[in-house]
Image 1 (cartoon, rainbow, N blue to C red):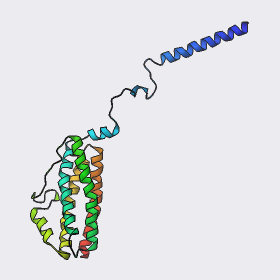
Image 2 (image 1 turned 90 degrees about the horizontal axis):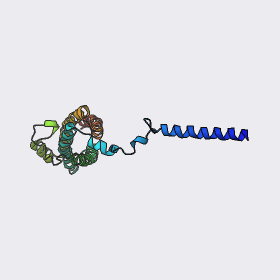
Image 3 (image 1 turned 90 degrees about the vertical axis):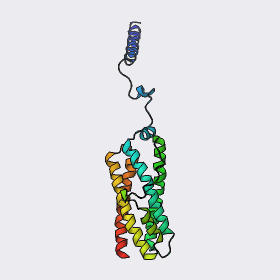
Image 4 (image 1 turned 180 degrees about the horizontal axis):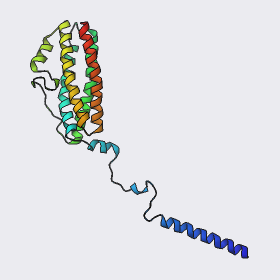
Length: 203
């Protein structure tokens, strides 16, 4: 009986210590990750959307009409006869890359509560590499090899302006998705400029 009583007492003491340990654990300490259950922190996607600054808005508002003009220039050359096949392929690539970016930029501006109806940048004396109305008219009227040459020269200047705008976003923007797009523009259009210089040399 004495042995049984001693064992019972030991079990009772162990149970008491266990309960005390659990009770003590609810004080200043808590289990990792358990104190976030009632957190109102935004989800990663909404946080990324909300995380923007004036540079992000400016980048989107300026890049939309800039891209739209590039798409228009590409459409012009794609509609012409007698254009170098490599130039046509490049124009198709530019259009395919920039139209989805236009759609994404407009979506971001809507999410940020900013104006996505940015108008155009035409007539800005090549500001940001944009072509003037006269430049666009010249491209529209050109034919054959002259149209190919003019498209490549104009698009090179256009890309250089886009790269400057994108670099400003990389340097000063805050939204991670917008910065990532800007870096993609820099990388893609730098490579396309190199291609256009090669094509100009072969015409």
